[in-house]
Amino acid sequence: MISLVEAQEIVIGGCEPVAPVIVDCQQMSGRVVAQDVVATEFIPPFDNTAVDGFAVRAQDVTTAGVELEVLGVIGAGHVASYEIGAGQAARIMTGAPMPQGADAVVMIEDATVLSANRVQINKPARVGEAIRKIGEDVRAGDVVFKTGALINAAGIGVLAGINARKVMSYPKLRVAMLSTGDELVIDGSELKPGQIRESNLTMLSAMIAATGCEVINLGIIEDDEQKLEATLRDVAQRCDAIVTSGGVGQGDFDVVKIVLSRIAEMQWMQMAIKPAKPFAFGKLATSDARVIPIFGLPGNPVSSMISFELLARPALRKMMGHTKNLMRPTVRAIVDAPMKRKQDGKIHFMRVFGEFGDDGRLHVRDTGPQGSHQLASTALANGLALVPDGQGLAIGAEVEVMMLA
Image (cartoon, rainbow, N blue to C red; front, side):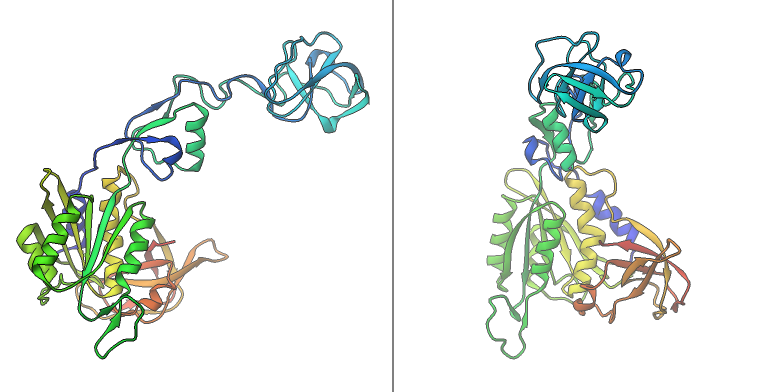
């Protein structure tokens, strides 16, 4: 057996980012920037008011109760044709450009309208008050996003604000997934003796999509070597990675294992963890000189889920340009119920539910049965507790938890 760290070095280290592409800024959510984004415009592009109120000269409003002449109303998107002089003001709406001569804005709540062209200011004004200055957020020439930055919804807004309509970005991966097994039923029909309902591909499809990838679900492939090889070679031409489920254990004699061993450079691993001990990683060369990573997950659903989280997910993120936080975040937590296990030379990943207590610490307890085939308890978990080799952990012990949500 090899350690999880060794397996991650093989798998994650064996994957490289795919070639960047030009992406419309509106499609950048969840993508990683592949080239520094430099602002060519200012945000805001001009001095404007942060509130509804009256644009004034601060020197005219040094005390409360001052009356001023109102020259007009300035709405957002409109520029005043006049300049504010001594004893004058302008009604102004949030976001509107500041008129010439004014250097402060008094909120509407701090003013009393006396007539259509007279206002009383009920508090002193300060220079710069309630004014958003040109370039206060972003200045032309600023590196707004460095290579490797992950763009979120606010980031898309920034890109639009500086008119960066096109961005060099790492693309979302196209990930093909498949499984084999004559016992699997996917159409909702009545189960026959020996059959079970497919769940792995449904689960993995959601996990791959949540990673930010486009899913190509090939479904259940019949146990035919020639058909499987043809399917794999065909999909490799139109995807960036392949995920398979089942047939990677030492004792498995599965058509997937037979075919992959023949057409790809594969490494069949046994890791010192439980569940998810077996894992396969390989590379399939395509006719257009690309190399497609293959992630072979075990067939038991919990093992499949955990091995995806520990190996396939971080590798896919690396391929999409992520350089930080490839793995899920981990937190030191307090054990609220005994976590029993047997000594076997492996790290156990126990499904747990955690919540923060009054002490500000994360407290966890297992979600139920921990068998590698028992997916129901996994659905209740928001973390995986890394329980070291031994007899388990008692109440009050500390444990490292990889957060899933």
